Length: 397
Image (cartoon, rainbow, N blue to C red):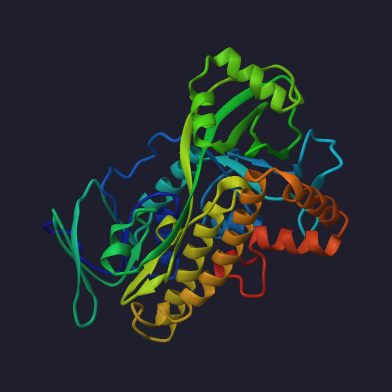
């Protein structure tokens, strides 16, 4: 780092989707940012796609992240126990303003847009690959010691994932529940159009999500017991497609795999606090939830927008960004994250326990919820992140 800037308002550790977005959100307020990652900060390989809520799309628009031509609008969202026209169903059409229910984007496309924007910012300095040795608090900031020298900052943001070293070093404990389950992810092409429908079918022991991508393509996210998901990952391709078609009732016609099958272990994990002295946790460092509702990334993006709100306020009032920006962040993000995490946990557990009264209660709740416009509206607002305390970067401008 010789002859390079070493003093910043913010140092962010971790350049994944949330870390990159957090860097842009902090820089938008005029703060100087250093973004560090142990790997080269580039697009990389990722076969997954993400569902972006309306507020997340608004965040990227306000940050000037160009996603044109990369997203597939979600026009309908359907949760069923059985085939798409089953009586046990919950159907959402359009958001509260009558528009789309968000959009799907492949993670590589989103990361490419974020990396491009970050590297064009005059306020963001990137370092990667770089090894972080320690983070030591000083009287008025944090010294981040690396294999390439020391950086100083007023605030340190941990975006270093579910096994966050910074979280553990700060003494922040986390509650963890392992589902003994995994999620198989792949991409298919198909003969019939998806028409922008995101369909999630609750099946014995898990759930199967069919998520629309651009063109006649869809992402498959199949969650279930670890052993079963591993077997589905390893079975011959033609056998897998036959099984998948049976689970989908053939509603997309003939299908072919166009991406490898990958699987990921599932857990629910919540940090017991999202802040410590001059430290904020964002994304998976703060919370990991079951993927069945597609809300994990959206929660992390709301973290990014919320911490940026605090930084903007601190800078506008001449206060220390490493202190005043954290005052409301923990409470603000804790309530939202725990509510969404609990909801997805209940759905995941009720799907796993597909027996007797539990199964009947779940089917009945789907049908009754589908008949209540008020409940559906509240669920839609929760999923989209809309609310009276929406961060500035997620509001219309």
